[in-house]
Amino acid sequence: MRVLLLTSGFPPTTGGAESYASVLAEGLTSRGHDVMVVTDRVAGTSLTAERDRLRVRRLSEYRELLTDPSKLPWEQMVFGLLPELARALAGWFPDVVVANNLETTVLGRIVASELDIPLVGSYHEHKPETEPFGRGKIALGYRSLAPDLVLAGSEYYRARAAKLLPPERIRLIHHGVDTELFHPSRDGGPFRRRYGLGDGEFLFVTVGRLKERKGHLGLVRAFARVEEPARLVIAGTVSSASTQYAGALEAEVDRLGVRGRVMIDREVDHSRVPDLLAAADTVAQPSLSEGLGLALLEAMSSGRPAVATRIGGFTEILAAGAAGPRAGLVELVDPDDAEGLAGALRRLRADAELRSRLGAAARGHVVKHFSQTVMIDRTEQVLHEVVG
Image (tube, rainbow, N blue to C red; front, side, top):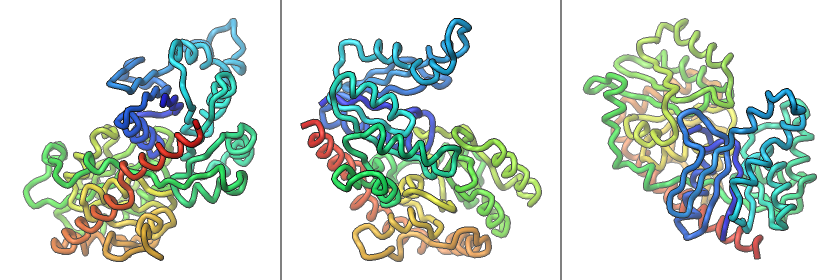
C-alpha cells in the first residue's frame, strides 16, 4: 500500500499532531508499506529525505509565490502548493491520502479527487471552533470535503466527528507511542549535565507547547512552594503557540523569584524528548484541556512517575480497559489547583517507593493499551478497508 501523508507540521517540529504523523509514517513503513510525507520546510531540514520505504518532501517554493508581484497572493494561498506537490509525486501513485490537519484536507481532497483514490482525515486541532469562522472550518473539513473516513485519536475527537458524520465513517483509534523509544532504560545523564544538576538534586519536567491550556503558569506557582533542592524544566516552543503567553510565563518565573530553579528550554525537539524524560525524577502535565495527551503517554511509557490534571483526555488514558480511571497510575489533581499540585509534587519528591510503583504501573498500562504497535495494527487494517 502506498500512503500519501499530508501534514503541515512534522518533526523536528514538536506537538501532538507532529508526533502522530511521525509514529504513523514510521509504523506503516515498518510493515512494508510505502509512505510519502509531504510537509512544510523548517530551518535546518533538507527538502527531501529517504530511508527505506519512507520519503519526506518539504515544500517551500510557495513562499516565493506569495511575494511574487506577478501573482495574486490570495490565489497562491489556496493553490500555490499544487505545482510543487505535483513534482514531488511525479512517478509515484498513492493508494490513499491521509490528511493530518483540517487545513491539509483541502489539499488532500484535490489530490484524492484528481487521482480517484480515498481520502482519510486525522484531525488534532483541539478547539478550532473558538477561532474565527472555526465552526465553518470544522464543517469544511469533516463534511464538505467529504473524507471517506475520519480517524479519531480519542473519544473527544470521535464525539466532535459524530456531530457531522455518520458513525460508519469514523474510527476511534487511540494515539499510540513508541514504547521502545520511550523506554525506562534510556540514559538521562546528558540532560542532567545540560542543566547543571548536582547529585541528589530533584528534577521535575513538563513537555508541551507554550500555550495557556498546557497549564504552565499554574505549575510554576505550584513549584515555587516546593522546597529546595529541586529544579523544574519546561520543555516547549512557541511553534503554533503564543508568544504573549511565553512572555507571561517568563515574567511569572521572575515575579516568584525562581529564575535559578526554573528553566524554560525551547530547544528540545521531539527526537530528544525520550532522553529528557529519562532525566526526570517526576513528570508534571498540568493541562487545563487535552484531546488525549501524548506527552503524558510518553512520560508513562518512559516509566516516569507523573502528576496530571483531572481532565477528560487524561482520564480517558487512565480508564483504558476499565469502567473508569484506574488508581495507582499517576497522581491526579484538579485543574488550576496550585496547592493540590504543589502537594502532589512534594509527595512524589519525598517518596521514592511511590515513584517507583507509579512508574512501573504506568509503563505497563501504556504497553498494553497505547503502544505504537496497537495503533498501527488498527490503522493498517482500516486503511486496507478503505482502499479495498
